[in-house]
Image 1 (tube, rainbow, N blue to C red):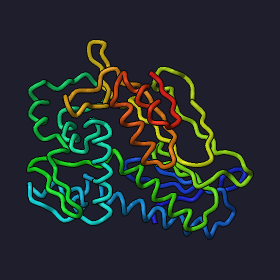
Image 2: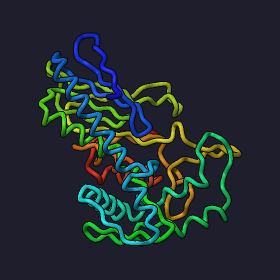
Image 3: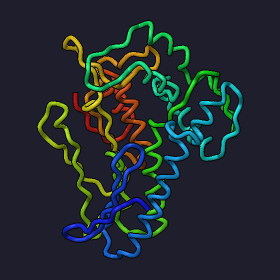
Length: 295
């Protein structure tokens, strides 16, 4: 299995591997190497399973099968159905701003730090292929209009984090911290009763500081545009795209961090908040979740 185990200074172990285009690590507050090794094997296997099943980049994934169905109904399993039902709830909660069919905009928007802005004509060609409301989801059957695609990248990594936390609890791992590319969750507080301490890097956002957050339960996610943007004529274009217009959200926050009971909850709240633009603060206040915002 492709992972590395490292002994941590002061005690404990860290399992490191790569998945979902992100560096992944799990820190175990444990001295039981045999248990840590077994759980590391199990959690990497589960993470890779989720990636293989739901990545739009892999030819045999469920998502690829859906995208290649060419308008024909396709039978889906219970796990996929539940994820799509959740995506539908997020679509409705956000009034259509969170839309898993909007990934096609990547064909014209390339957020590489350059200055190439797509034309209105190029964007308009893709707008007809966006709109989750056009899909028909009935239990274990999905019919996606021909030419449209779905992309579960907005919830897949967070879902994987929650699955790993569940696996660790079932395996009685003791205290552990899961970090998949900055999406974080913990099983419990540390053995010494102290919280887990994590740093949110704000250096790429104009502040030469790291925001330190301590937590002992639940999850934390951060959405932002520190590394993915375009800059032309002094105007910065965020990678947070409005699926209703095809253009970057105006007045989007630079960074939003949310704490919630599960990673998938924290992730969707931080993402929808980014999509709210200048109304992000109001949305976060009504969400009821603890949050930190940087503009």
